[in-house]
Amino acid sequence: MRVLVTGASSLIGVGVVTRLLERGDDVVTFQRRDVEALSGVVDQHLGDIADAAAVSAAAKGCDAVVHLAAKVGVVGDRRDYIATNVGGTRNVLDAATSEGIGKVVHVSSPSVAHDGTPIIGGGADPAIGAHGAAWYPETKAQAERLALAANSSTTAVTVIRPHLVWGPGDTQLVGRIAERAAAGRLALVGGGVALVDTTYIDNATAALVAALDAVAPGARCAGRSYVVANGEPRPIRELVEGICAAAGVPFEPRDVPLSIARRAGSIIDRVWPRLGRDDEPPLTRFLADQLGTAHWFDPRPAREDLGWSPEVSIDDGLRELARWFDRAGRSTNDAR
Image (tube, rainbow, N blue to C red; front, side, top):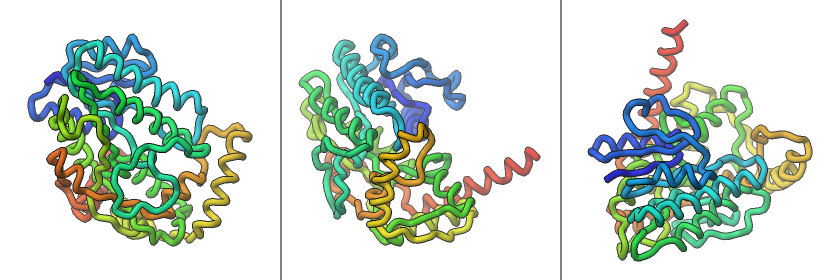
C-alpha cells in the first residue's frame, strides 16, 4: 500500500513508518518539520495539519492513512487545540474521502472517555464532551467523534487509543519522570497505588499497523474504537520506580494525597493562564485524575478484532529502556 502517516515526527510516528517500510509499503509523511531519521527514505510533506490544501496534496495517490498528528499537552490556547485536533482531523477525513482512500486509522487517546473515576477492565467507552479546562482530551474527543462519523461503505475508519505509550526516546512519560526524579521533584499522587496499564512503544506501533490491515469497508473494526495497552496493569509506583532505575536516577518520591492533588490542580488550572505561563505546570486537575485513579482495560476486543497482541512485556521493555539510557550515556561521554 501507499500509506500517508501524519504526525510522523513523533516517537510513535517514526515507529509506524519504520514498520511499514520494513514490510515493503510505500510511505508518505506529513508533519511540521523534517525528520532526519526519515530523510531520503520517504516522501516527507511539511506543513500544518490545519491547512486543508496541504493535507490534500500529501494524500494524493494514497491507499490508506494513519492519522497521528495532534497538539498534545496540558496547557495552551483552546483555539490551537481545536485547529489542530479537530480541524486537522476534519482535513484528513475530507482528503481521504475526496481521494478515494479506503482505509483510515485515527489515533485517539483513552483520556477522551476518562471522567476522573477509576476504570477497571473497561472497554473503549464513548468519548465524553466535558473535560473541564483540559483542552487535549476535549478536542481529541471531538476529533474521535468526527472520525467515527466518517466511516462509510467506501472509506473505512477505525479508532485506536494507545494507552500511556513509553519506551526508548520517549520525551513525554519517560523524559518527564527522569527529569523530575533527577531534580528531586518527583511526586506520586495517592502514593502511586492506583493500578494503571501502559503500552510499550513497539506494541503501540504494531497495533496501529494491525489496525491498518484489519480495517476495510464492512470489517468488524470499521466505525469502532479500541484501547490498546500491554495488558499488564501495575501500580503507578512500580512503573515509575522501574523507569527511574532504567534511567539511573534516584527514586525518592513524595506522596501527595489525591484529594489535595485534585484541589491543587483545579487552582493551577485557573491561575496558570492568568500568569501568562505557556510552560507545563507541575500539576493540573486532569493530571491529578490520571495519576491518582486506576485505569486499565480489557485487551480482548483489540486482540479479537485487530488480530493484535503485545510483543514486548513491561519487564522486557524496562530492560530495553535501561540499555538505551546506557548507550545514550556512553555516547554523551564519548562526545566529551
